Image 1 (cartoon, one colour):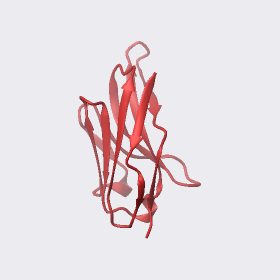
Image 2 (tube, one colour):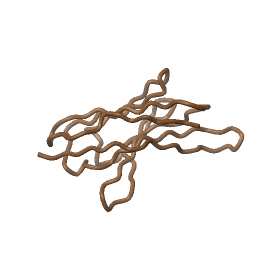
Image 3 (cartoon, rainbow, N blue to C red):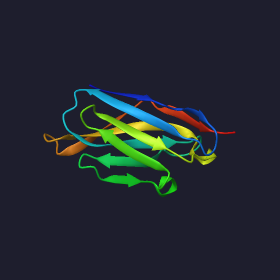
Length: 121
Protein backbone atom coordinates (compact mmCIF):
# COMPACT_ATOMS: atom_id res chain seq x y z
CA UNK A 1 0.00 0.00 0.00
CA UNK A 2 1.05 3.58 -0.68
CA UNK A 3 -0.20 6.51 1.36
CA UNK A 4 -0.11 10.13 0.25
CA UNK A 5 -0.75 12.82 2.83
CA UNK A 6 -1.39 16.34 1.56
CA UNK A 7 -1.35 19.59 3.45
CA UNK A 8 -1.29 23.33 2.85
CA UNK A 9 -4.57 24.19 1.17
CA UNK A 10 -6.87 26.96 2.31
CA UNK A 11 -8.41 30.32 1.52
CA UNK A 12 -6.23 33.10 0.12
CA UNK A 13 -6.87 36.47 -1.49
CA UNK A 14 -6.04 37.10 -5.15
CA UNK A 15 -2.34 37.78 -5.53
CA UNK A 16 -1.51 35.74 -2.45
CA UNK A 17 0.58 32.61 -2.03
CA UNK A 18 0.16 29.09 -0.72
CA UNK A 19 2.46 26.10 -0.45
CA UNK A 20 1.16 22.56 -0.80
CA UNK A 21 3.02 19.51 0.47
CA UNK A 22 2.51 15.82 -0.19
CA UNK A 23 4.41 13.09 1.65
CA UNK A 24 4.45 9.55 0.28
CA UNK A 25 4.92 6.50 2.48
CA UNK A 26 4.40 2.76 2.43
CA UNK A 27 5.43 0.32 -0.28
CA UNK A 28 7.34 2.81 -2.39
CA UNK A 29 9.50 0.89 -4.79
CA UNK A 30 10.56 3.32 -7.47
CA UNK A 31 9.16 6.82 -7.76
CA UNK A 32 9.22 7.84 -11.40
CA UNK A 33 7.45 11.17 -11.02
CA UNK A 34 5.53 13.24 -8.49
CA UNK A 35 3.22 16.12 -9.10
CA UNK A 36 -0.06 17.93 -8.75
CA UNK A 37 -3.37 17.93 -10.57
CA UNK A 38 -6.47 19.99 -9.87
CA UNK A 39 -10.18 19.78 -10.46
CA UNK A 40 -12.53 22.73 -10.39
CA UNK A 41 -16.31 22.30 -10.03
CA UNK A 42 -17.83 21.07 -13.28
CA UNK A 43 -14.46 20.57 -14.93
CA UNK A 44 -12.17 17.64 -15.62
CA UNK A 45 -9.08 17.00 -13.57
CA UNK A 46 -6.09 18.69 -15.17
CA UNK A 47 -2.34 18.59 -14.78
CA UNK A 48 -0.80 21.46 -12.84
CA UNK A 49 2.87 20.49 -12.52
CA UNK A 50 5.03 17.40 -12.36
CA UNK A 51 8.65 16.66 -11.52
CA UNK A 52 10.44 13.50 -12.60
CA UNK A 53 13.05 11.61 -10.64
CA UNK A 54 15.82 13.31 -12.60
CA UNK A 55 14.47 16.73 -11.74
CA UNK A 56 12.86 17.74 -15.02
CA UNK A 57 9.59 19.62 -14.62
CA UNK A 58 6.43 20.15 -16.61
CA UNK A 59 3.83 22.87 -16.03
CA UNK A 60 0.42 23.72 -17.35
CA UNK A 61 0.58 26.91 -19.41
CA UNK A 62 -1.87 28.59 -17.05
CA UNK A 63 0.52 28.35 -14.09
CA UNK A 64 3.92 28.87 -15.72
CA UNK A 65 5.85 31.63 -14.02
CA UNK A 66 3.58 31.56 -10.96
CA UNK A 67 3.84 28.01 -9.59
CA UNK A 68 6.96 26.02 -8.75
CA UNK A 69 7.07 22.27 -8.16
CA UNK A 70 9.92 20.74 -6.18
CA UNK A 71 10.68 17.51 -4.35
CA UNK A 72 12.72 16.18 -1.46
CA UNK A 73 13.76 12.68 -2.50
CA UNK A 74 15.02 11.79 0.97
CA UNK A 75 11.57 12.51 2.40
CA UNK A 76 9.55 11.27 -0.60
CA UNK A 77 7.80 14.62 -0.53
CA UNK A 78 6.66 16.91 -3.32
CA UNK A 79 5.83 20.59 -2.92
CA UNK A 80 3.89 23.12 -4.94
CA UNK A 81 4.67 26.77 -4.29
CA UNK A 82 1.83 28.86 -5.68
CA UNK A 83 2.34 32.60 -6.07
CA UNK A 84 0.23 35.34 -7.64
CA UNK A 85 -2.86 33.22 -7.15
CA UNK A 86 -5.95 34.01 -9.21
CA UNK A 87 -9.63 33.15 -8.63
CA UNK A 88 -9.42 30.72 -11.53
CA UNK A 89 -6.86 28.70 -9.55
CA UNK A 90 -9.66 27.72 -7.18
CA UNK A 91 -9.94 23.92 -7.21
CA UNK A 92 -9.28 20.75 -5.30
CA UNK A 93 -5.61 19.96 -5.72
CA UNK A 94 -4.55 16.30 -5.84
CA UNK A 95 -1.08 14.93 -5.29
CA UNK A 96 -0.01 12.27 -7.78
CA UNK A 97 2.84 9.78 -7.56
CA UNK A 98 3.88 7.50 -10.39
CA UNK A 99 5.64 4.37 -9.21
CA UNK A 100 7.47 2.33 -11.80
CA UNK A 101 7.13 -1.45 -11.75
CA UNK A 102 9.90 -3.38 -13.42
CA UNK A 103 7.75 -6.51 -13.27
CA UNK A 104 5.02 -4.94 -15.37
CA UNK A 105 7.22 -2.37 -17.17
CA UNK A 106 4.79 0.43 -16.48
CA UNK A 107 3.90 3.19 -14.07
CA UNK A 108 1.20 2.87 -11.45
CA UNK A 109 -0.63 6.02 -10.35
CA UNK A 110 -1.40 6.85 -6.74
CA UNK A 111 -3.49 9.81 -5.61
CA UNK A 112 -3.82 11.88 -2.50
CA UNK A 113 -7.17 12.68 -0.93
CA UNK A 114 -7.18 16.23 -2.30
CA UNK A 115 -6.88 19.60 -0.64
CA UNK A 116 -9.10 22.60 -1.33
CA UNK A 117 -7.54 25.82 -2.57
CA UNK A 118 -9.88 28.81 -2.73
CA UNK A 119 -8.76 32.14 -4.12
CA UNK A 120 -11.27 34.84 -3.26
CA UNK A 121 -11.48 38.33 -1.86
